[in-house]
Image 1 (cartoon, rainbow, N blue to C red):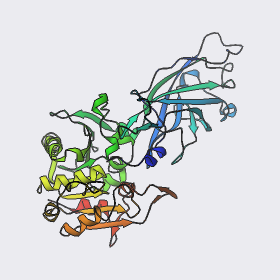
Image 2 (cartoon, rainbow, N blue to C red):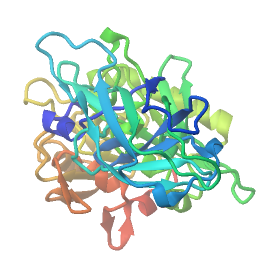
Image 3 (cartoon, helix red, strand yellow):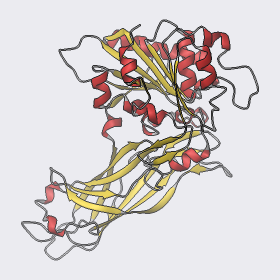
Image 4 (cartoon, rainbow, N blue to C red):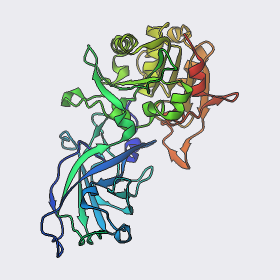
Length: 421
């Protein structure tokens, strides 16, 4: 569901569809007889607070061996400009477009002989992120990003004269964790991303983990914006289950992350069969073990996780609703999931939230659900803090993405993996 604007200020920044860019560089040095054109890749990582561009890789291997003695953080300058991919209405806000210099913290050669410019980045640091949040839409969008690179000093080579690059051409946005998820569209038109485990002769049918995103990662159909991207770039919810650690725990699992065409909780009963269609298709096509299908989701997706276990009580081996919505926000209108429905859930359920969540109040939602769901477990945090950085209280999905919740020495991923339908 839509989180507070504060959340999106942390997610400030952007790299949208990688855009080709040709810019003149410094004048060629003596000894250079031809213009030198080099392409570059934007290297990104999905942090707990959202994806950021953390380095730039210049395709310099064809220039010949470069003398690293002359390669310093000051050899190149990097500028980034991020803009919305869709028009912003007058008076509307987007967090955040930007136009600024990126600090180069190091310059090195990779094993291919390409120059890698390491950039300053951190949780909450503005200017490196790839997503913007449009307030009126309650949605993240993948921002269009233009990087401008300037060479300040010639590159020294082990053989031949120094070289100055005269043209930089921007290439793709590369995030290995995100890129490991393939793009798909279901028969009903719902887009989804799929991680497929490595092949192994040791395993038969594989488990499946269904990740249901929050409200800010859904589509915005009035603008025809349906990217199938923000579900993996806004947080580590789905990515966590594709890490080597999680894959070992689950003995190699598929991870599927569908993207809603609006908010899950706007029309959960209609979305439920569309999600089940994806799950059933993967069971047929991918050899998924029908006894080891797990569902987890955050915020709006936490509601949808509960809705799925209400609609299909025999489909899942375990459910992990994180800061999920049960009562309508604002307290007006009927509950999204009734007390009778909660009391009727028999899927093993582990709920997670933080006491300082000011977006989805814990008492009337997660704690209330725990009181009614038979045999359910609950983890209540006081705050959301990871690696010394305090996030908004609504972001308790960070703990699940890091396998932090535990009970009697058993962490939540291990608890899920031990459940069979």
